[in-house]
Image (tube, rainbow, N blue to C red):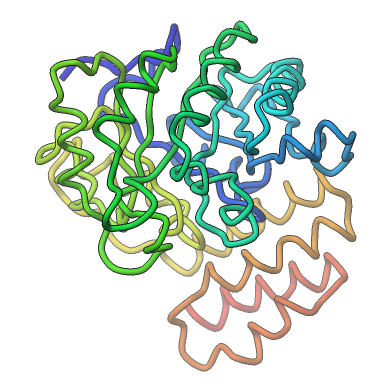
Length: 327
């Protein structure tokens, strides 16, 4: 298998991508995913409208760090001029590429014509893409879905049009917008796009990859150039290491010990506080802390502490307690 490239970014063979997820893939989470072998990562998605209106929160989301590279900034919106401006703002933050989100199915985004709402207006989708490609110097990639609903799976033709607009890679989530995250992802259409002789750009598959064997089958059965993993990394960022180990040895890594999970939680917490300050860093870590210890027996009281404590020393003590009790 040839190494995958996006523009001049060499991602090696069988690269693994961390999907951009709002309120999840912040810098501290990206830090631990990189620790465990994510080959390419993205910021949380940023609204083009918010950037145009000078939203500090949106500018903060675009801060990237050298240790994360290669890293992309993902933008979304449905107004061509605003999307171009957003891409140009994002480019100034010095990422390695700009990704356009045409895939988010959340109602408040899709129903106003952004994210996967663009699937109902492919001409406008292509117009926006072309405008962004021509308006910045960095490589531009797109993430999208199979179509709006079961009766409008337009991805095979749409992929050609997006390629012709100048994108450097395409990520396809194997569901329609109507499916949201329900039902099984349909990888057959992702495979059809990859097998289309007209397609020259890398195709990245996304949807329902939760373990090492599924990642292996995605490459073997559908011929994709890369695999993007989203929700399965939440509380399980070491999934990248498990998959890479399986690729290299054909064997499964043993489950991560409670002791190692505690050490990871401490690293993640420290990075969150370092980047966002004590108050916000702890508040935003709550969504992650308990997820590292799913499945432990008699954990309810300790979980409550992890999601309510505000003092970092008490949090670290609670994590040490977990290591002692649940060996």
